[in-house]
Length: 80
Image (cartoon, rainbow, N blue to C red):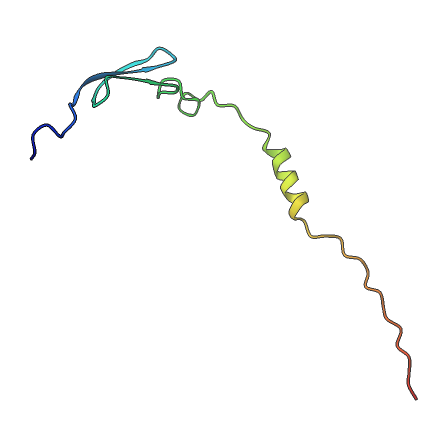
C-alpha cells in the first residue's frame, strides 16, 4: 500500500442532541447527530400517528370511478 494516502482512523465521539454520547472510531474528529437510537420515536415507542384516515379518504375520492352519465340514444331515421 502507498504511504500517506489513507486517512487517519482515530477515536471519535458521536453526540446526539438528546445528550447521548457514543464512543467509536472514524476518520472524523467529532460527529453531531439529530436522532440516535436512544431518542428515535420508532424505537422508543413515542411516535406520533398521522391522520391516515383523511389521506385514505382523499385517495378514494381521487381514484374512485366517476359517476357515469346515462348514454344519450341517438335517433335513427329510417331511409326508404
